[in-house]
Amino acid sequence: MAYGDSHPPANVKHNPHVVGSRHLTTTGGDYDTSYPLEVRKYIRTYGLVPPTVETFETQAQRCLKILELKQTPIEKYQYLVHLRATNVHLFYRLLSQNVKELTPLIYTPTVGEACQRWSELYTQPEGMYLSHSDKGNLHGIVQNWPHNVEITVVTDGSRILGLGDLGINGMGIPVGKLALYTACAGIRPEATLPLTVDLGTGNKALREDPLYMGSRIPKVTPEEEREFLDELMAALTERWPGIVIQFEDWKNPFPSLERYKDTYAMFNDDVQGTGAVIVGGFINAVKAAGIPIRDHRAVFLGAGSAGVGVAKQIVEFFMKEGLTEDEARQKFWFVDSNGLVTSDRGDKLADHKVYFQRTDNSGKQIQSLARLIDYVRPTILMGLSTIGGAFNAEILGKMAKLNEHPIIFPLSNPSSKSECTFEEAVAGTNGKCIFASGSPFPSLEWDGQSLTPGQGNNMYVFPGIGLGAILCRSVNITQDMIYASAESLSISLNAQERADGWLYPDIRRIREVSVEVAIGVIRAAQKNSVDRELNLRNLSDAELREYVQQRMYDPFDEGKKILHELNEIVGNGHANGANGHANGMRAAL
Ligand SMILES: NC(=O)C1=CN([C@@H]2O[C@H](COP(=O)(O)OP(=O)(O)OC[C@H]3O[C@@H](n4cnc5c(N)ncnc54)[C@H](OP(=O)(O)O)[C@@H]3O)[C@@H](O)[C@H]2O)C=CC1
Ligand SMILES: CC(=O)C(=O)O
Ligand SMILES: [Mg+2]
Image: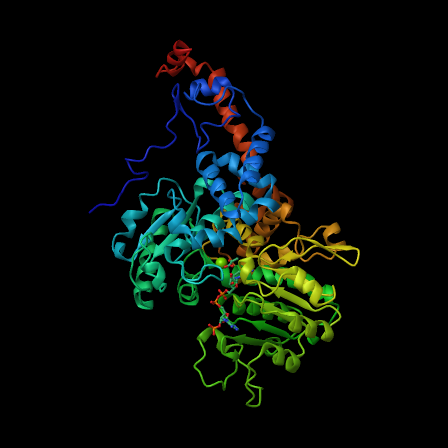
C-alpha cells in the first residue's frame, strides 16, 4: 500500500487563497479580525467575520478575558490549543507578549495534566503518530506531512515529565516543546513537527482504557525499538535532509543517543539540554555561594537520565575550573530508589550510573537522604527523582545548618513532583537558599524582601540549540555545542538580574537569550567543523547576531508581512486578475 510519495502529497491543499495570479502565504488565521476589509474581500472572508477591523491590543484583550473566564488551567490550555489551531499568528503574538503568564499553561505544569487526560480531551490532530505496526512503511508515511520541516521533537511517551509512562498521550510534550521553539527561538510554526512513536506502553491501565488511541500492546523490546528508530531516522532525514531531531521524555534515552549522535543532527533534551541549563544556572549559583569549587559536594536525589546528564555536565564545568576528572567525579553522591549508588550495593547498576558509583563507603549502605546529608555534608542538593516533597523541612534545615547559602535545586516536573516548593525552600533554610526549580513558582516576600525563584528548565537552552543547529546546518550536535549553550546562558544575565542575584535571565527575555545561545552553538559547531553554512564563519559576532535575528519568525512581522503582501496585490491591480475573485466579490457587495 502506498502511504504517500509526493512533496507535498497531491491530496493536501495548502494556502488555498489565490488572488489574481498570486498565492497568499497564510498558515492559519484567515479569519483574523485584524485583516483590513480589502483583504477580507480578496480572500473571501468578507462577511464571515464581524465587521470591525481590530488592533492586536483589542484582540489580546479579548483573548486574555476569555482565559480569565476559564476556571481551571486545563480549560485555559484547551482554549490556547483552539486559538493556535484557528489563528496561529495571533496565538504566538499573545504568547510572546505574555510568555511568563502563558508558558505554565502550554508547558509545565499544565501540559502534564493535558497528557494525563489526552485520551479524554483529544479534539484534533497536532502532529504525527507512527506505530510499530507501520514499520517498513515509515518512508512513505512521513510524506503525508504537508509542510517542510526544520525540527522535530520525538517521544515514545514512556517517561512524560515525572508522570511515568503515558504512551501516545505524551504527544502534549512534543507539541508544547515545539510551541516554545516558535515562541522562544523564532522557528516558523509550520517548520516544526511534533512526533510520537507508538511503540506500545507499559501502562496497563491505559491499554485497558476504552478511550486510549494508541496500540494496546506492551512496550516493544529494545531490539524492536532500535530497528524501528533506525528506519525512522533514515526516513526523516531522507524527506528533510537538514532536519534537527530532538529526543524527549524517553524512559531509557541512552541507547538512541549513543547510536545516532554521530550520524544525525540529533540530541537528547533530558540528558543534554537539562545538563546544559543546570550548568548555566549552576555557574552563577557557585559564584553566589562564595565557596571555592574544590570545596563543593553534591547530593543528587535521582540517578536517571536527567540526574546523570546534569552531573556529567557539571563534571565538565569543574574540569574547566581546574579539577581533574577524578576529582570532579568524586564530588557527587547519587541516591536512587535503592539508596546510595555504590559499587557494592548488591544489585546490578544500570550502565549510566556506573560512572558515579561510590567506592569509598566502606561497606556502609546509606538508605535515607537525611543520613546521607549528615555523612556527605553537601553544599549542593539536586532533585531529579520525581518524588514530590522529598526535600522536607528536616532535609532543608540540615542544608541550612551546614551552609551559609545552600544550593537547592528541586528540578522534577511538573510542580506536583517538585522535591520542594520555593516557599518551603525559603522557609526551611530561613531565606538562605540559592534556588532553582524545574517548574515555575511565584515570587514571595521574606523578611521585607521580594525573592524570585530561578526556573532551571531546559526551555532556556533547547530552543537556542535547535535554532543554532538549523541556521548553521550542522551535521551533528556535538558535546561542545551543548556546553556552549550552557556558557552562553550563564553570561546572558543583564546587569539588573546580576545585581538581584538571579541565576537565570527573566523569562520575558527568552528570545534574546535564545539568540545568544544560538550564537554560542554556531561558533562551537564551526570549531568542530560540523557546520555546513560556511558563510557564517566569516561573520563577526555582531553580524552573526543580526543574521540570527533576521531569520527568526516574528508573529508581529508575520501579520504585517501578510497584510503587506495582500495590499501589494491589491495595489498592483491584481484585483481584476485571472480568476476574477475581486470582480465576483465586488459584485456580491
Ligand atoms: N528541570 C528540567 O529541565 C528537567 C526536569 N526533569 C525531571 O526530572 C525528573 C527525572 O527525570 P529522568 O531522570 O529523565 O527520569 P528517570 O526515570 O530516568 O529517573 C528518575 C530517578 O529517580 C529515582 N527515584 C525514583 N524514586 C525514588 C525514590 N523514592 N528515592 C530516590 N530516588 C528515586 C529513580 O531511581 P531508579 O534509577 O532506581 O529507578 C531514577 O534514578 C522528572 O520529574 C523530569 O520531569 C527532566 C528533564 C529536564
Ligand atoms: C523539562 C523536561 O524536559 C522534563 O521535565 O522532562
Ligand atoms: Mg523532558
